Amino acid sequence: MTAPVAEVRRIGADEWSAFREVRLAALAESPAAFGSTLEREIAFDDDVWQERASIGSCSDDRAMFLAWSGERPVGIVGGHRDDDGHVELVAMWVSSDVRGQAVGQRLVSAVLDFARATGTEWVELWVVRGNDPAQRLYETMGFAVISDVQPLPSDPCKDEVRMRHRLT
Image (cartoon, rainbow, N blue to C red; front, top):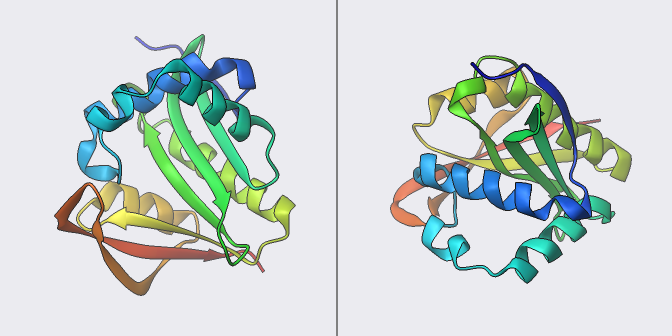
């Protein structure tokens, strides 16, 4: 049995190996949910993971958050400011053994708090059409589907729909 999730917090620059662990677990367990692929990211060398963790730990424009169960990372989400200055929620995933324990809500809340701190008006995300549990989570957190649809970058046979949460 997994220990209760103790915290969701912004990644530390030195936590790059935990970041790699949880990101690769996400891509392996839920490949249809992401624009990237396990094959692509498993080939990254340590320098790439270190740089991504470093940027996610302290940038004003990018933040990466991990959920922890004891010493084990069990969830991940990122937020980054887009070209229009709004925040994009990306890379959301929660380990199956802690789903239903409000980990997803806590991760989304971390990105919403990051967005508020940047002074943005809204947060947007893409969710794969048919990923009903994820879409329901986002809807309970205040996101609504907008009209944008695009092919999933990692599998153009699938579509993603755009969702938006207005902060103001």
